Length: 503
Image (cartoon, rainbow, N blue to C red; front, side, top):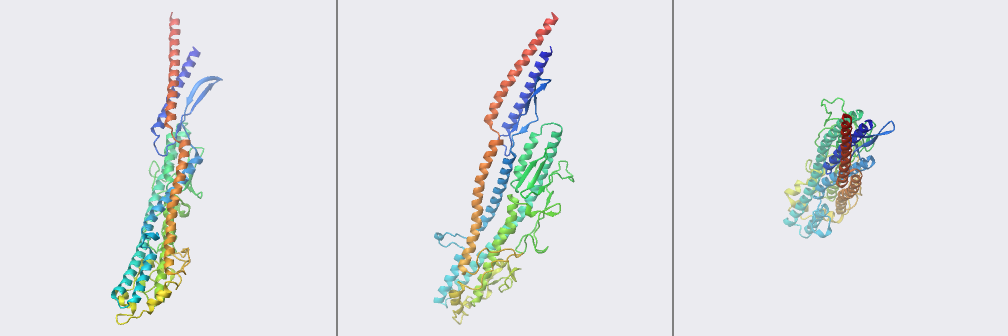
């Protein structure tokens, strides 16, 4: 009787374990196409009662996780997101710089437009009294000014876009962090009760994958099932808001904080004063902006505070050199639209007195736009001295373009020699900025290839194989049928025994 009871219990435990394992397999198949889903693993183990087999026990369900590979994939997600943001933002700049392909003819680069002015001045030396030749010089100068102003405006527009994206990213990161904390609370509770937490762990891993696009991070699972999130430099980002009013503890305003701001050439992070400073990102009252690298957030910080301000500084420096070299030859064709004169040259002072933002304010002097004949000394004279000096000397040499100590904080540099000729200076500026743009594009392509390789490895190690799961289900069906036969046989034996006792 005892042996029959034991056999029935063993067979019944086998049925329950098989049903459990089939449920896990079905869950895996159902989520095979879910991004970030990790294969769940049925945990079935043998029971031993005083040295005798006691059937099987099932659960809790585990995950086919690989923390090292997951962290590597998440890190690469941040790299791809970062280069994608930078490439997209800088493509808007590239579209305004004209073509650098010499075979494309008129390419509308700064150097081409400067060359047009040079050509117009050469033509003017042949016919100094020609109102058409005089007007062409002024018109070509205005075209160059428009291109400079358009580029300068694009830099600040992209900085504003980056600033707005920083605020949006901080809100998203807060939501993801506190969602991770909320799921961790449920996981820890279930673990303490010996219950199955695999579904919540999978949900948490999916949120971590989302978060990895926002910034570079690593994660660590503690012994009680909690998750620690760290930035690339090791700064811990809290996930449990103990002051939360919401029962699930999810918030878009904690633990990080920042604020919206209007960006212009006078603003920088960090600023030299409260009026010039763009907002940082704070964690418990501490500025952690420098710790938040990679991903969408890190890319927008780099664009706002480094890449685009450097481009602005390069264009300000070129604009100043353009104006001063023409002036030094007696042809003050370019001035500030707000002051009517050329800035003093202070690289950290804002226009109209300094260089910062001069590219936004540069214009063709009103004395020439109202009377183009002033280029040759007025309508009653044909003085070509200034024009000839500009052609023989001004385009080749003159006051050197400032190359360091630039920007609101005085920390920026052009990265190239400012003492070259004007056309070479314009060519170098465009080439350097094009190089930055091309680097972002090529790095995006390279990082996407690496991401594909890592994701393939991660999917192979932790993802769902529908074919394997279907094979497991077939094997489980056979096991279920075998256990059911044992149960049926034991029941038949019980019936025979009862019949014998009754007889």
